[in-house]
Length: 560
Image (cartoon, rainbow, N blue to C red; front, top):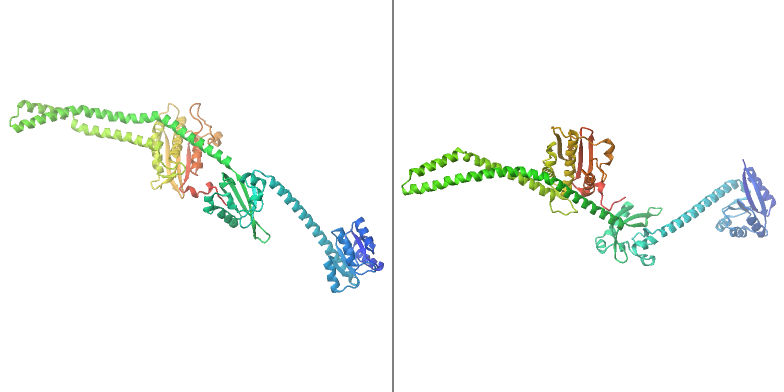
């Protein structure tokens, strides 16, 4: 199928024009053409019809190629302008191209016409596409600029390679407090507190962005009036086509409300943990009292025995004193000797000499048991005076042992306790009081699960096994029971706040939810479980030995 080509011929020779037309038709074009010889005719033709190309002779009696190009240029048409001349020297050809002509062809060498035309048409199409792309880009940039300027929730601005402000949107004015006229050209460090500037933080952020392309940071930022707000700042480098740094795009989001909400949530969780601890202590009080009462009664019984035996011993001692004085005087009454013998037989006959040491030993064992329980209670309730916002290196085996002791009355009737502690365990960074509460919750849950499986009238016992081991940079604690197991239908919900499978009044549903909060959020650790119906459940706690080095709980600043 022939291609239509609309040609405007600026030519004084009709024969030359026909030769040009014949060449184009031979090449397969279906021509629509008009021939003009003067400026007015050319202007009228350009204004009244659409053309694909203009072929122009260089020298004509009343017109010339430079004059014709002048008329053509006025129309601002994006079509090829090709000079076709019988005689044109190199200097004239160069001059024609300088005028703006797309190319030239000699009439005696029309075999160059088709390649020249096709290249010119291709260049025209490329220019059109480029201009359309430029216009689309300009429109897109304008829309984007208008959109950015209207954003109020985010400060969006540009920095030059030295970190000075070059653009400023309405959100930046709203968040930082600077009008555009007052901040242009000012350094990025204007948005940071003096101590951060002195520490080199703004410069460090820009440098990290240069090295990595993008950086995300959270921290305190400063407004124009000096007030501070918690901000998330993203710095992204912009580069030219050669990869050279053009500057930075900075996006600041005011997260003060979110931080306040998080702080409030942490305070509520802290109060919940404290309330649960007090509740646990209250629940354990009766059991602890019972645990202490038994050795107290044991010690009291032995001490009363010693007290009663002391009277006989004192009477014997007094008579020995009298006997000694009589012996010194050389006159020992026979009655005195008989009384001393009687008292001695009474003391020896009652086996006081053998029983009193045993009673003392048993009393000491009772007081040692009481001391152990009191010490465990103290360690459970007040595990240290460390910074509440910073974990303290703790003997985790001892912390667990103390909690087991405190909770003994909760589990001793339904389970045997087995401990498998790694004796080489290094100190572990802990919020010890909160960790103890987690272990207590797991022990109580384990005891309840075993009791549920055994039933009320079963005289057998289950087993609770608590173990610790080191796993490279982590510490693993397992609390396993031989209880009823967790039903599959509720396994996905056991860490939800207020969810409980216990009866009304037997559980608040906060224990495991707070346990996850303590282990995952406070300790940057992991808490999961393995369970099998009628076989038991094992809760696995994993804690990092170096919390600051745990990737999944990264600090506020991170490189993306």
